[in-house]
Length: 438
Image 1 (tube, rainbow, N blue to C red):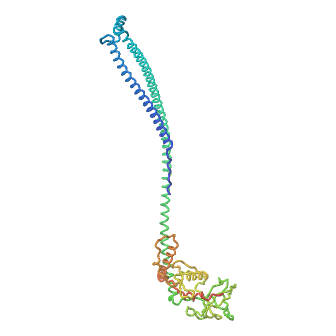
Image 2 (cartoon, rainbow, N blue to C red):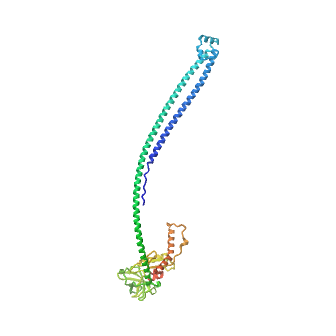
Image 3 (cartoon, rainbow, N blue to C red):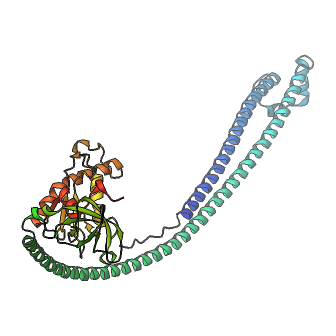
């Protein structure tokens, strides 16, 4: 399997943190600058308003002064002209005007003038204060701009250093990745060579297998030919004797010359055949072992009769292990109803007698035991085909058994495998489910 090379990711968190710090610094400086501009604009507006009020007041006072000068001199003039007039002349004019009529006006004018001058001084002071504040704000603005520029430069320098360091890391990762890719390519090349060698060996083995399969096919043909010679008529299956009855006691007890040394076990059954008989039609009874000794066994007669010297035989019991395939349903209870349970019982009996039960018919199969055809389960197919659903699994098994019933018989016919029905199997083995020994 190809090795997956994981690339190391650049320090994204550090990059994001530096970017966010830069943005925060920028907005802080910008907010301070905006606040300073707003204060400066407010001061300028206030100064402008004061200048406007001062100008209007000045115009008002100048108009009043001109009016007073005209009253004093009797003609238009200026305040300087009035000051240059002789005090006596001024006194006479005042006396002539009614004995002090102008003096209160002049005093009032002087008071207003003095008040105007004071106001002017105050306005000038306020203007100077505003200018100082403006200058201070300008200084703070320049300082903030300088600080901002310094911070930007510092952050730019840091980012440049970080970028340079990150580039070194990336270069290192790329070099490491290249080295790993080269190593992986070398491994792939080596594996390709191994695969080529394995493929060559596989081809050689396939050639050998083909030759072996040809030999097997030839042997299978030979087996079929030998079966044809041994069993030319499957309706007359020969059942060679496995032993004989050596004694018959009163009742239904007899003794045979097969014991534990020959593989005899309790529960095994045998067909009883006369001394001169050999085929299925010659079977006269069946017996079942109830007690096993070393060289002999005690049996119970299940069906028919048995006599001293009669031969006993079981289709399954043999010096070598026969291979059986069992298909269909079997009626072993005598109720006329063939069931899958009967098939299970037949398989267990074959294993008890020493035989081997296979799952399908092949050239190695010795006998095919056939019961009744199972019912076609097609009409009861579940709606949902789910391999995990027990109902669907059970239905699939029934469908498989239904299809195998005909298919296995066709294969057995082509391979000349003997096909034995229920009755013949029971007779050739002496097995009698309805009358088992107690």
